[in-house]
Length: 535
Length: 97
Image (tube, rainbow over all chains, first blue to last red; front, top):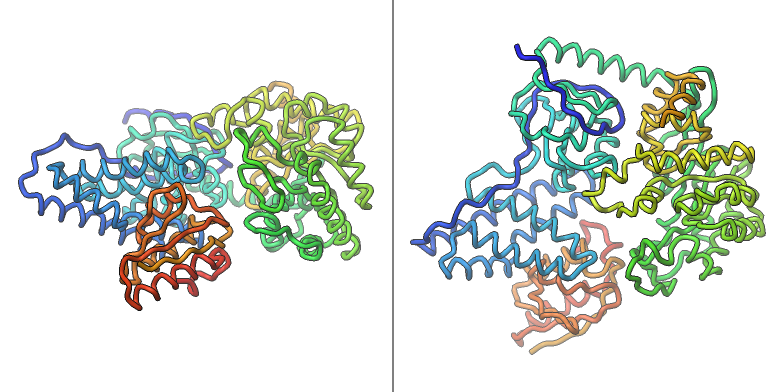
């Protein structure tokens, strides 16, 4: 038997898996145009394809795992049944275009219109392409793109996965995910992490692997062994179980093998995200407060805020909660803040800049937070401002927070300027929290939302790690905590590196904590330092 | 012709779920209704794509029109106007439409 070949990509989380592959259908290619002899039959073909896809999407909407996915699929179903679209298709067929091309042309017309409109509508253009591909696959008699169901557990291979695909993904049937494109912040990666599925993204060449090939996935190393023997599959499955048991067996606060602590904290958007807290719970490293402010006309009242903050403080039973003040920008406008549209919202008035211009809104938030802290005995509230660029801004914020009686005030490091002047900033604050998602974006001048720039936004990039090291070193000199709350904190392979740099806490979504805790426990502090200095 | 102007009350505007609820109601009401927003092409209220293309955010004025003059048409236009004037983002999925 020929030896297996190894394909490399970027691993997400950790974990092992092995099994037969199945590729998700690729978007269909249009065959060349054919002459239309029976216009009515052609129109009926097109209409039937639209109906089939609309019904299929409606069915998926009902099966979907969560209400948002369900609503998205419901809207897609309605688009497939859209009467204007249908009229367009019929018109094109009357002009003697065959059904596949008429469908394609009609969808493209709407796609271009949406892209031209920009903003929210432009994002829907990709959805339209997804629906178009389903309809064309049906009219060509090809299997519809979508999660396959071969009747046995399998490793799913795809170009990339869209929200419509992942909404109905059944983790009991899928052993692992491997995609040709994407990155650690792509939709596939986020889904894999939340489902605990071993996953490798940006694995070039994976779509050439024929269905039914036995593969071994190593999400920790980011490799896929293609063409392994049956015996190896069983061995990997055993190792996967042992690894999972080993990860589960490590509990308690985050620490290296020789006991050097690195606190493992939760990122939450509301009290609901806390779930049930076990003995290993150490606190909240990022409490996003936007849920109180977004999607409403008037600002939340002082009492509403106070109650919401107190709910979280009560639930954590004395553990620390790090609250981030309102982080809004022109891309998600808040009517009560009178924000002007901006050409570059990511580079505009956002985060603390809004706080400095609408001081009453910030003051009310800080006052509500202080009141909530007073309402809950033994609470440990830390407050931080987003998008701080200079020591002067940091000083302004901390003074404000302390004037409300909040004793632990810090700032987020998301802007290269702030990372480079970490020493000056640390002189003004009690702690730093590095938001690696935005820090990557601004350091590499790469839009976080741009899938094609995933490689630049990878947290393993040396430039990002150097900025983190700068902040950690400054923290050590000042004797103040420096934590990470961006997606990088959830990467088990980076945890020892960050620990070696002197990072004091890693905050992530709860599901990512066990793998990080496990990885930290496997290295001594000295090993972590060595790993950090080799980056 | 029946005409009624309403202001979009949904927090996310006439997008996503509110649009879906509105379009579904329009396609089931048995009457052809147009939705007009200043500066945009008139939209068939039963067409998801046309309604989305209106790009009607919260606070946008939308005029609903029906060429028919019947009581059914009046009822349909009124029902759709009420949907526009409701914050559909805060309505439970089962209760809407």
